[in-house]
Image (cartoon, rainbow, N blue to C red; front, side):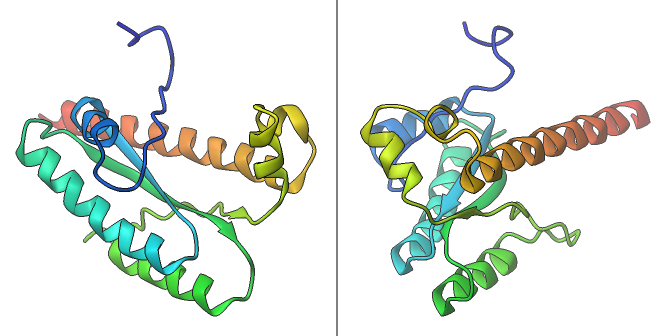
Length: 159
């Protein structure tokens, strides 16, 4: 069992309902969605929500969406604005809290270059702007988990 050995375990799966994705939906407690400013990615987010709802109905009732991160974002593009608007509308809870992470990952050649070398951007470009965006996203994810743990503790104490 890996629980307890690691703080977080991330399973990077395809956006469509493949066998590994279905297995991840069945095993995960949380799901983090990522989308690029691309028409297929926007449609893929909707499909992912339907797949997550299906996983909830078929055995993993506790599966929750932690948030949505936008990546490959080039500033001031119409498609980027459409994606951001869609995510902000589709992923805002009834309480008004938006699941979209504030941190966005910019478009950069350093990511495919690192992948080509079989390394991470933290290894190949530790001081690059995109690398810092990933660090900021990690901090934001940590803050979100901390806030969720505090909310759950408050709910448990109120019972």
